[in-house]
Length: 278
Image (cartoon, rainbow, N blue to C red; front, side, top):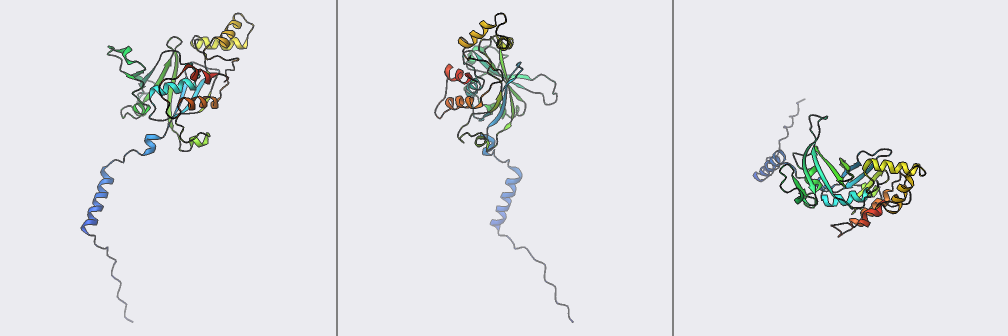
């Protein structure tokens, strides 16, 4: 029986010149052009853990969700509210760079951010920017600083309250919904611990002394300290539970301060109120 002729191998259809040009363009674009930043890379909030340094039993921390476009002027407002400060003292931010090759090395200072850079005019050793003119993204996304920048926020140069800001990553798209916040809320406190420290208490040692006064109200001058905190301290309240923290109260303050159309300065009441009753 004769063997049937084998079928010819399939051949690809020849492409027109226009189709070849389209393929060449696509290949060139894929191989040589970097993809532009996605919307999530430029708008997804940073997760920042702010810690009031030197404070223990308990520590005072706030986990914040903050947009990359947030200016340092607004970062100051957010930190005042989150930590229950009364916005009554001088402040500045310092940016330092970690050494990627030496985890033990001290961070290298590279930038100060201040409400009034003219204070440092003429200081050739101090690069200072205005807090209203620089954003979180300007620091965290600067190519030569990326994954190396650390931010310190100092409030009240007398008491010397230092806050360390650690960038943990990015918030997920469902973060706001998970915490019951509207999708248009850009500044959010997700968690935290520790009652706000007292204004004008004398720094870390003064805060420890005040906490001890509430533990032993009949000892020495403790009654006087307690009365000062209750009736004179700008962010004092009727009692002091060092562990008390109300994230909903903080977010109420943030919502009021960052409502649509609000910007610029913040009254003492706006800051001090979020420390009351915590």
